[in-house]
Structure formats: structure tokens, C-alpha cells
Image (cartoon, rainbow, N blue to C red; front, top):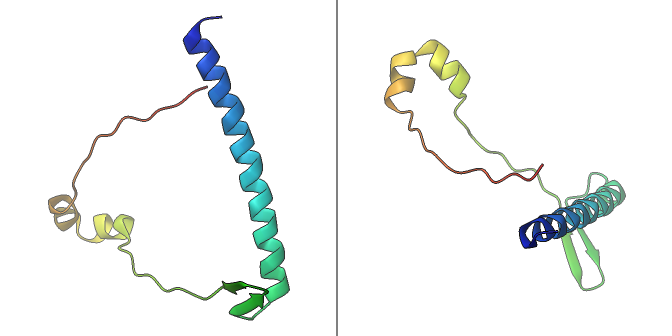
Length: 87
């Protein structure tokens, strides 16, 4: 097995561990949220947990492009990045 193949295998194994840990963390978050119910704050020993509503305002780009395509085009900026994938 080549060195790069070995590194890719190790990367895949680590990614699987990370995914598993993230799923476990999400399950724990869900359990804490269920315990909190409608409460926005909870104290657990030395820990303070908050779960509050947050309001954000975002531009609906689909609606903007439909209603004012010329304005949307003037303010659209394209960027190029490199996406790294291992399949």
C-alpha cells in the first residue's frame, strides 16, 4: 500500500470517528433540550446552558432574482474555491 493510500485510509477512519462523535453529541444536545422544555436557561452544577430564540434577517436571493433580476445581477459576486473530497 502506498503512503498516500495509507493516509487516505487513516483520514477516512478519523472522519468516521468524528461523524460518530458528532451524532453522539447531537443526541446529548437533544436530551438536554428535551429536559429544558420551554426554559431558556438551565444551571447544571458549574455549567450554565442557554437555549434562546435568535432572530436573523437574510435576503431571499431567489425572490430577489425573480422580482429584480437586474439588481440581483449587479450585486452578485462569484467566488471560486477548491472542494476537497475523498470518496
